[in-house]
Image (cartoon, rainbow, N blue to C red; front, side, top):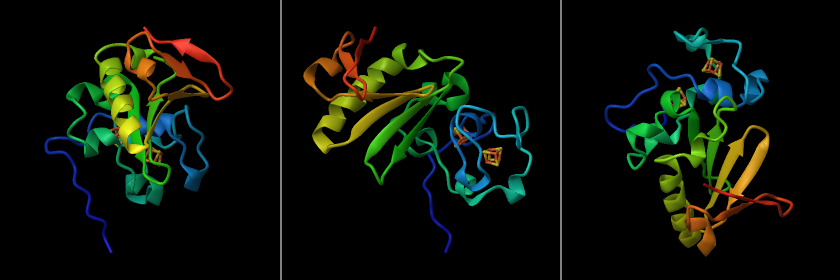
Length: 160
Ligand code: SF4
Ligand code: SF4
């Protein structure tokens, strides 16, 4: 059975290969944060017709959620937003070449809004910045530009 996926009108993967760098693909054993060897950054997937099922079934939130503005196009912002429904977690994967992109505007304002909304739905918002996992809390201070973000283990950082 073919899965029906609603893609936001006018959006597609053309010109973007960010998920082929930031995400792992279990089926072919490629790690996160490095280009998949089958990725041609100018032309896309070199094994497109034979690409793994994982890749066939992957859609980032830029493609799925019209609430994400055009500034979230992964090839431009160097971040890939993914909703993991099995953990009810919104994950922002950040390119190590631009590790602080998520703290910049307009992204940080959007993320603050997601954190606030997450507090109402038991959802978690997580940033993967390189190998560091940052859990954005839904506490009152997390909603402010200068609010803290907690790391597992208890460390906290101040956002700009
Ligand atoms: S990050 Fe999103 S828009 Fe870019 S190639 Fe992957 S699925 Fe397509
Ligand atoms: S197999 Fe193709 S679609 Fe999948 S990560 Fe590699 S380059 Fe991207």
